[in-house]
Image (cartoon, rainbow, N blue to C red; front, side, top):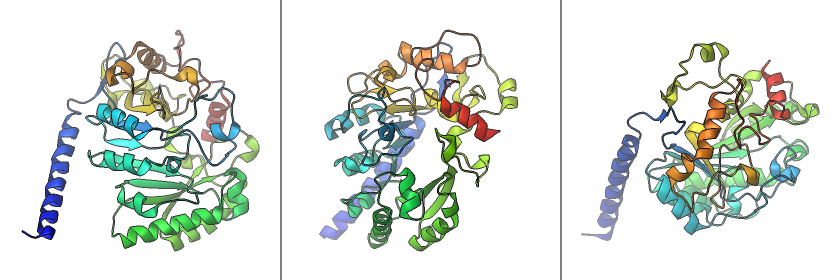
Length: 367
């Protein structure tokens, strides 16, 4: 038997194994996931894993850009061995891993290996990057098996782009984007799907049409969302409220009033208070893991006081269904009524707190 035949046979066998594994992973979600009467919850199928909370840019409304004093004091990158520990614990349940949160994912030298390890277990993988990097391995990114890559480019020239993406190089980003598209063609790969994300604000909304033309020339898809801002002088006017990212859309009030409230409930039947944001649903359907293994109740909190356990040191159940996590779910599920505040969701500076400027701005946008 020739080496070529052996290689093709091994490759076919591996593909068949991965298809079988995917079916087994899907079956692990039967019966349908539920929120229990004690606010315990079925294990999530989606995970945010922060490769590192360090970024090369200083965007003014990001934790890294604002350099908030209450931000998580520990800075660093997730090690490959530590990622393997996390992956072993979540892979029986994980369908998707989002390798990003507050930092720039490609600053972690092990990111390609992490993605490949997840892909080899039948898990979809996603990265969001500023791509303003002088050292970027196009081939490694394409061959890692990454499902989707979102590139944040909020402008169609250096002046408008750099207004928010402080420290970023517009031409460098376009160069890297073109390099990835070319590498994908050369390597004859279907993935990653590459998207240009353009967040509009007052200073860049006039660049929308030019950005569409540039994206077309680069052969990448582009989409637009209103930037959620902390300063009203930045607020975009050209795009209507329907363009706000789905994370910032709460429940329909009519749906909420008619929803079944008695637990346990299937997760698909759980409806949160309309004043909460969609990202508050992460308390029941997604786990956010910091680079050091610390677990947050959602992706919007970042300080040390918001950490609920550590998935490197503890089991998935010990963290996900800990008393603190259950208290957070209870607070969010019963939001809007008189109740004792949870130690995290009821006290941390986040979207769920009605006096937070992001919430006030969100309500204004959605009017």
